[in-house]
Every structure is written in structure tokens, then in C-alpha cells.
Image (tube, rainbow, N blue to C red):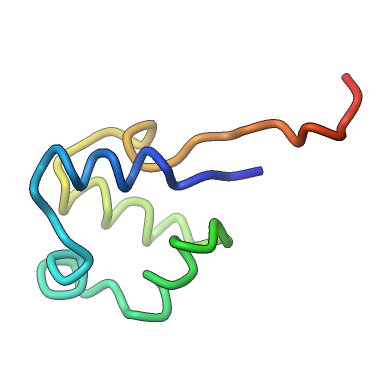
Length: 71
């Protein structure tokens, strides 16, 4: 599963809000809702988040294996 938990931590460290994402990066409210629900977003959105927050991709997104998936 893809998790955006690192995004929320990065935003907290950089004192950024979802309003910041919408105003500075023109990230739509529907995309913010998708991020909050750990749903897919475009690579363009991921790039925009990295630019807005001046961070690396791993500061925005993480892969977490499903607990019920066998190795």
C-alpha cells in the first residue's frame, strides 16, 4: 500500500498546511482528499509536492507492504 504519512510529517516540520499546497502549488482540494485517503495521485503531483516543500520523494510517499500478503 502507498502511504502519504511522510508527507504529513514533512508538512508539520516545514509549518506547511494544505492551504499552502493549494496556494503555492496549485494542488486541488480533490487531490488533497486523495492524499488524505492514501489514494493514487499523478507523478506530476508528487513532483509538485517535492518542489513546494523543498524535499525528496521519500519525504512525501512510502510503500508499506500489505499485512495479509505472503512473501
